[in-house]
Image (cartoon, rainbow, N blue to C red; front, side):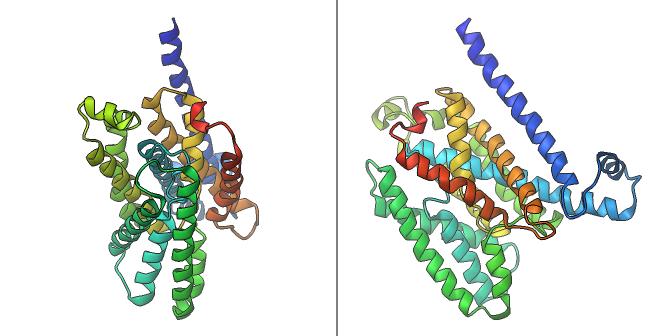
Length: 334
């Protein structure tokens, strides 16, 4: 009977999360400087509404919502992978220097040249890889302590931010646009941006979600995982590279969006407990949920202006980080 209950609970949880996601997705299609009623929304979807409503819903808000959903899922999974394979509850793209270093690489490319859009994710990947490697090198390879990782991540993030600021001072007319981009936003992202980022997000997401067995084994003691036939070093590198690719590729098109990769995996881990097979899928759903909710709030809180969504996720995530650092009980022991 206990086994049946443990199987039913995640199914109900997935159902509730997906229902909330669908609800938020439709709210996102309606919300903005010009609210669209449910009736008008349905008529825009079936093509019977006026041209302005169809453009607003189908060309502006629909791709933006899809990017928010997919981008949030990418950050949630990236954070869960980093926390899982390093066995460090504070590891995440935003706290390991990955996002700031990826942003520095993109700003460098856009300031010093006129790159094609296809080069942005490649540059972001290189910068994110360098930043993440530097953070873990500073923190130490063995027995990574959460505080050391956070301090090393702060150091790398500060260095990347300082270099980014220096580049902005010489970027001329592009500085204002880049400053807003650095705050992280989904505004103005349409079908073109979604099409360009899609393969960079879908392929790593699919790979990570199907590689459940090595992911579970990586959270065991290294000697035990090796005894069960897992090449620990090789698999850890594969998972970290895929997680880094997810975070860095998103930065290239939305700017830095922080703390989704920290908060979503922690909420998911508290809910599923020791059922590790549900950690990555639930982190993906909760990441999409959090980013969609933050984007809807960003459109409304400063109406008729729009706040950068990265600012809102930071306001949510910073108190969560303080709570984790001051908590005597590890959040992963829930």
